[in-house]
Length: 177
Length: 123
Image (cartoon, rainbow over all chains, first blue to last red; front, side, top):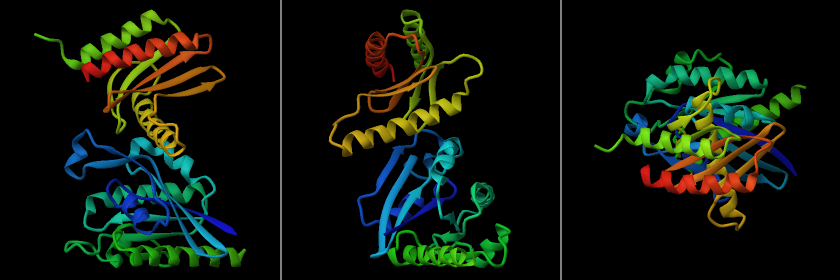
């Protein structure tokens, strides 16, 4: 059996914990804590160490999903969690353009850890003011061959689609080698 | 008028360090990783200490719970040059202590327990 380690990264409140909870077949190991500073206006709880979930794709393939904390002060966890990853998802809240710059910084940082395939998931597409994936691609200055996928992290099918696309990219890059 | 809480907490941390001289630094951190009070030497980065404390305590709690060890009391890390010890302060905060390798661990843990109880009343 093959285990594929995938990291879900992205800015604060992009929906990373939700993304993993939607699809994991095990009770997610999450480390959510009540927020005590000004970012409480955005949401109540935040991840301080990691999320961990698992999905069995078929008899031969299991995905291990590791979600990072979004806030910069936990970036030492990014270093730890990126160890040994075979691909990563950059999750972005498409309705909060003020987080796009941070998303780009995170994308670049994870890209530097190792040259693994990645996809950008344009989350919260169910919200009215969400930027479409194509606009997000421009905002993040993503190359034309980078997959920028529409996503609603609360919807299992949508999350599944994002992960399958990443998996295809991982398999393609493995064939090229 | 009562002293501000931060001042009370810092005073309690200093008491702890006076009674146990092998402690090099101590801090009270909120569970989401923000510093509430600290007595850290220059060169120790407050933000790193607080974020790391919150992450470690949170993971420790999950591990203790899932592996049937119950409510987490403390996290103990020993490196070549000394200890990092964490202890929950009530339900909202963590007490983090950095100590030299020469520290007497039993006494240190006892002093930390007392300090954590006092701090829980201030937080």
